[in-house]
Amino acid sequence: MEQFNQEFERYQRAQKQVEEIKGFYGHLLSYVLVMLFLMFINLRYSPQYLWFFWPMLGWGIGLLFHGLKAFNYTPFLGKEWEQRKIKEFMDQEKQNKYE
Image 1 (cartoon, helix red, strand yellow):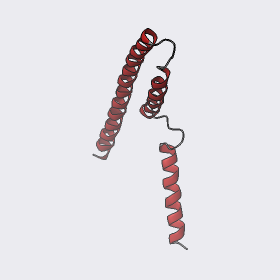
Image 2 (tube, helix red, strand yellow):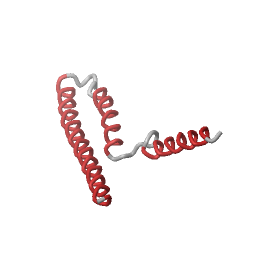
Image 3 (cartoon, rainbow, N blue to C red):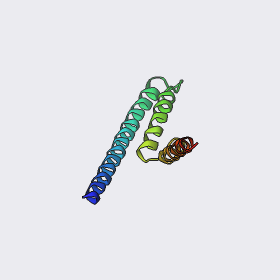
Image 4 (tube, rainbow, N blue to C red):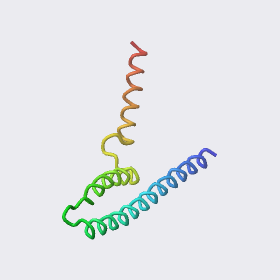
């Protein structure tokens, strides 16, 4: 029974990961389409000032963070960091208990 629960939890985590990646690709597609549209408007009506770079930069930063989260690339405060901190706090508590 325990093995079934673990397998089901792994399945749920994998399913959530797939949904995250799917959401990222939808976000990427909308980014590309909107940026192409903004470029067209900018170059057609005011080519002397290229303003479409600003929304491209702002939204691109958000897209970057979405991608990092979707593909589980968190170099700073990721799962490994959480596990190390949890272990550190547990060891600290254990040490304080025996003093």
